[in-house]
Image (cartoon, rainbow, N blue to C red; front, side):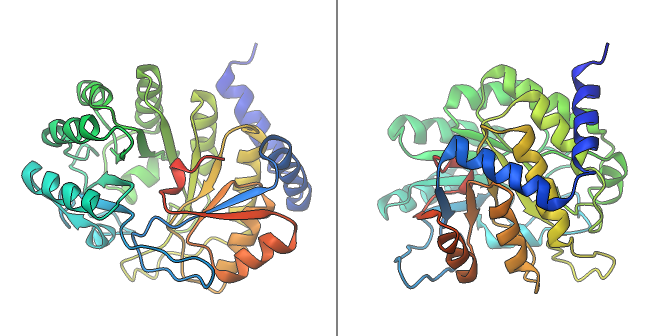
Length: 330
């Protein structure tokens, strides 16, 4: 008798053999069945964005790095560059002051992130009391945390502090973990961490990075199996965007990104699926975003105008939300 892991992997393998058009037709049907015609565009204000029909405010939902630009891993695709776009707050006092200032300017919430240590953990422990105080002061103010791998004791503290959501990259290939992340970890570590967080009652928004292994599609299907098996509140896809100038990286094709998204929708028909902030500024970007719509996503962060137009052309009702995409209500 097959166990759930084997069953899901067999299902995924069967689905990926089907033509993309067939997968997208079923994915879009399921998306409309369970979520109707509405498509959300997430504009949290972490980067500059302009749309002729909607006025946006900077930092309505800002990203804060608790390590500044420092990351011990020096991952091949990032080298800490992503952290440079975040607001640095390397001690709890600075962190608390920054959040208070943001709240006074009408911010809706924050993403707490940072560089990882050699165990793949973001050093969050000393910031938990500040998060707890922020949530007690204003329970409606959203605090989501990108943890990396996290120990049970800290995850428990996060739960007691009232964190609204945990974000974690799920990596489905051991070579990617070693060669890209420079970590001595296994795929199972990510699965066990996600399950532990689920059992604690955390709301989960796992991320799958499409093209993680130098642009190859390698561990994405295993990551999707883990996420589907655990059962989460939402699934976020981002697309490899090398920030280091390393020419070894290739850009995943729109057909690849669309197929992964469509299969995710078919396996998780009632789970909100998002296209997150990160994707390459490539000539394929429009096709990637249109492909995500055709593959049944609920939300796209920072869309191109051509993507907005396409959604409306095919009869979807669009709305803009100044919130991290993982929190947008479907």
